Length: 224
Image (cartoon, rainbow, N blue to C red; front, side):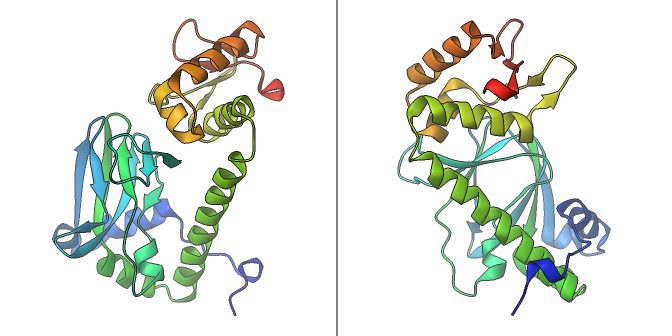
């Protein structure tokens, strides 16, 4: 049995990206491309599973494939990865999409090639995969907990979480990424864009947020 507390991998996503770039077969199994707002990335292309590493930009994990503006379950930023499930399971059908929320750059990696790199590090690679899966489960646990909260509380928690994880710390507060529009926040919190706008205005009036100059700035995280 694998216990995460008993071991820790020295491999990080950043290090794994370096391993891919340094491998002599990089051009055969990997590619780097730019994305723009609204671009969709899928795990399965031509019967081959792909893993995506985010080099820059912000992306949303979308679960409703049949709708152009489906719900978002997670936000991913620089040096996050998407699609590692295929390495965990022999039989897995992807049901999630990666939505580019603005201009960004991603590295697409063949899953078999990536597994071979991890396999070279044996136990450390195993712990790395287990840690990534644990982080994934924690994200979905947070997402599930949101559903039991009132709408305003959901928006408050998401503003703080995305600010801490994807925002920029300044002497004045945390600057939220421009990509996290009211519509995008609504899709993550299962509320309307109008309700997000209403909540944001209330937080601005309360002195918790500031919107001039743009983008939004969290100036009192303790009250959020």
